[in-house]
Amino acid sequence: MLPLRVVRPGAGSKAPERKMAVRDERADEDLMLALKHGDERAFAELMRRHRGPIVNYVHRLIGDRDRAEDLAQEVFLRVYRHAGTYRVTARFTTWLYTIASNLGKNELRNRARRRNVSMEDTPRELHEGDYHLGTREDLLQPDRITDLNDRQAKVRIAIDSLPEHFRMMLVLRDLEGFAYEEIASMMDLPLGTVKSRINRARLEFKKRVEPMLSARRTNDPSVFWRIHRGSSPDGEDHTRGGTGS
Image (cartoon, rainbow, N blue to C red; front, side, top):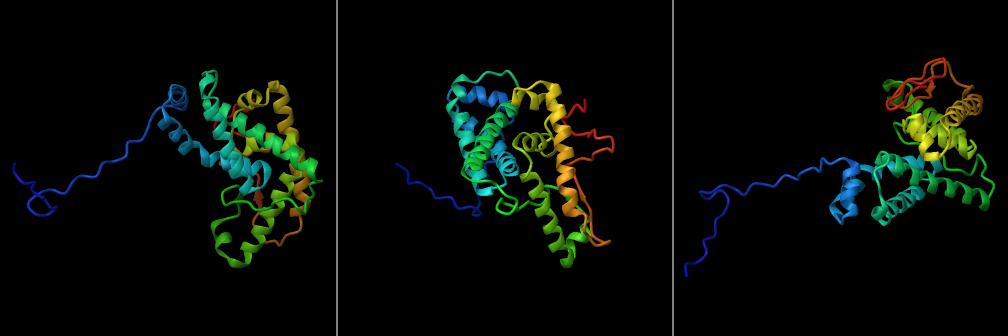
């Protein structure tokens, strides 16, 4: 029997090539159907794609980052448990955010039962990118950072103080960018009710946040209520994924 020959990279041979990870390009719905038939890798891919956005969504909804992490874990646990009954009747994300919304609503209701939520004791931290706050120069000037953080806190206070049904509509539409029809499906509400609540939620948010932001220096940046998009003066927003009607 011939002895094994040890081949070292660089000694007259090519180094072994690294295997590139192959990204799973299947649609979310196809991944869920694969998970339904026992494909564990499909579940891992769904978590890779959507765990971060779900954590952010729940955080925006309940205002507590640590609790949002826990609830996101519960969201995907339910996805896994109910994979066997999954049917493609809508986009996977609509179903996923319905689960997250229900858990978020339960959290808010349980919190309200435990104590009266006041503006002083609710979480206040916002993450960069939640709102467009001023210009790049503003963010680079230390004397304005404190003021911007204060304004972010006040915006968070205004969102947290909204009634549950208004807060959820505002987050789903203006922060997450879901279409009116998708929100109607998630909330099991008529389309007209959804549009009405979103408009009322925006008005209520504006009424609550403006007094807190009214006292400012003339050179302070303004807070704009828009995420990835702009809102027109007529109250209609032109967003990705939205119908606007």
